[in-house]
Image (tube, rainbow, N blue to C red; front, side, top):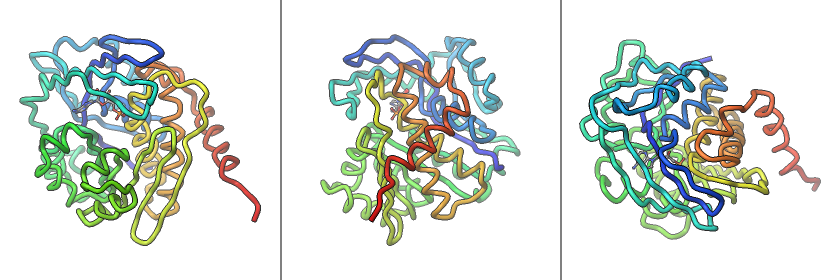
Length: 302
Ligand code: AMP
């Protein structure tokens, strides 16, 4: 079992979906990621919060064994995100992004953090992702996530990080936007030309598609009758994906395929409730059962 490090946002989210509304609840890409990955391996977080961040949220992560020694608590306000979804839950509309303490954040990795074998650069300013990447000593696998906010606002910095990672996890609209190409397959191929050897395109309720050198792999989303809030689906997908690879200590294509299924499983739990509410009472055997049920979803006789 190998350790996993994530740099990303730890946030207070305010979210409206057709099924409810929450204000200033626990969120952030590194939060969802680390919580999900903690079911698979040891996870360390590099991030920053303000003094206003509720201590109970830190306790929730610590209770799952998440290593918060790289989480700075500084003077100022925690990162805040305000988002909204319509009946098409695949598309988040950002109403407000307040970087707050992230605006002046300079990550500085400890000795143990620098030797990390598995690194996830979760959705955050690509300049911060690059600063972390510059400090680690040749990890076995580096994966990256990003979003429209950074593709629009920091494209050059993002292309710089992308050139140095092994795997990009991205949703379909963002893949199109990044590659400036409407067809998702062509977009994924164009992104392969930007650096990563594997691109995983997440398509919300329609599943996810991996494109790698000469190979495709597709996993459906778990069929859900009740989805309350899709926030964090992408980050928990990444948590299951990277968590599984780190647990196995492997990065071969068969392991990557299994990791995509674990990613889909973790995302399917997250969307059942707002914030991390469903994950907070998730049990390891529920993960294994849903993982096994994916085999039935795609099995057929020729
Ligand atoms: P997702 O898994 O894509 O739904 O990610 C949702 C999380 O991303 C939310 O909890 C937000 O706090 C966080 N988030 C939203 N916008 C940004 C941003 N520009 N940078 C970093 N994190 C963000």
